[in-house]
Image: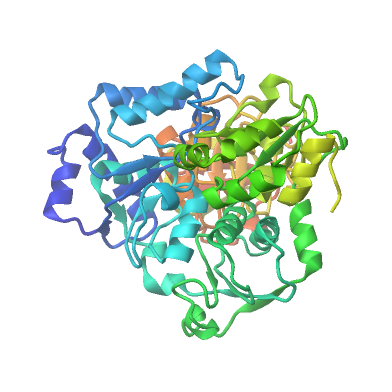
Length: 408
Length: 144
């Protein structure tokens, strides 16, 4: 693989231990994936910030780097974590302490510890064609698909290696011909809103695994809809991007999205596939629910506003826990605009930093969850073992009020 | 008689064990118990099975990018597989495995799923880029 003089000097240790380690990781991956060279990146987003996924061995790895005075070389934001730094959600102190050691280690190495899974809304907005190195699979899909930036499905440590060097291996999504569509998805029945985009994503991800879908037939999708669509596709499958004809920058037409590729499969979305998407990985024997969680990816201020309007004047059932998951940016604005007060009167908690699947509902006595994102439902059995229901936002709010999972 | 097949090194190292094979894509994130190696993904054909100490064979990866940290923690935990063989390895598995030194190979020179079935015994020399397969029942010193 070709390395510039500066990259060779990083490899040789002239720029310190961190840049050398980063360069070693990137060159190893570059050789594995047949990259001819590295490309410069100006921003990294690092996942793997949760104690639940990285564990004590991860804390040790990171704190060791801090001791060696490792620093990032480019602006670097951090993914969500298992706790809320502003509100005590009742998790054991031991878990909170371990989690904060991960956050602090990254911060000490120069990362901006905003803890969000939506860096494209409150961190850094890459430009069309810009090379970046982001982990967080939903952010990878959003950056490639909606923004037209260029990003591979980086593992947490490979995006961190980019943070240490300002480089990433040039393969996969960094190369134009690899971004062409591979499967046409005809959207026959239109999704009614956010959660149905999530259900479509879960279904399609499972069907196509790593292929690039070209959706034809969406009508005025909101950015929140495309974010949750991609988030779902990247957990039931391993997709790096999709095209939405007429709405995403590399897909003005079906032909442009396929870039000359004429040999592709065709799938259809009807009510049947949407319902199937909601069912993937949901499992619950009891309709009695004690946790309702909304948002994944994190809620935008528009979504918080809409949910507050639905909650206004109502009250959750006694004993019910209700989390609205977002970041400190949206939370701050919500407080100023009075939405937080409405949500609190309902009995809900607007959280920051915390991701349901990285947090610890199982350690505060909760048994059965309802959510409006198929990504949450997909990871719930493995991450916390709760029973799980998945549906739309209205269903979830009715469930919070009645205490029982509500059919649509 | 054993059979040797060349392959590509993703993450160096050596591991051997009973093969556990799936043709479904697999995402490590939140999907394997660190102690027992039990697969936790609802609806996966390996749900409930253990990959602990085995040579884990799946075609390709899926799922969240935090999976690379999950692979790292798993590789340093009791539930770790002895080695991983893919049709085509993805970045997320590769970087996690390289850092925890879990042997991983892909791109066998012969058909992966025709040559290895669950219960076969497989030696994976990831450092030198080859595997050795003992069909089920052909080795008396291992229990199939």
